[in-house]
Image (cartoon, rainbow, N blue to C red; front, top):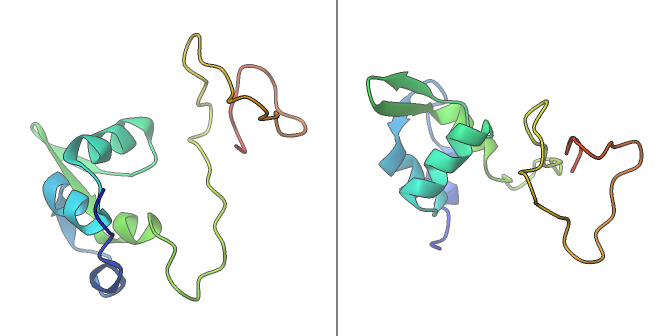
Length: 105
């Protein structure tokens, strides 16, 4: 995994759009990692044919900018744990969470 390009991300135009490859380079993760996040709903993206386009504002949301308040990681509303998946040993369910949802993890 490469290092995210924090300075470059901080100066992005939030209205500009970026390809999956450009987004992967900026965030320091793989092309497939970006596609997985898009499909999981953690990165919002537009689509034209078979290509995804990610707004600069979404790229900026993916990193903790210096001076930002700590953001709590959330999963898309209604996301469920994959069939057969279990919590890591020692992990506990958040107070008020049901067995079938993973909200607030």
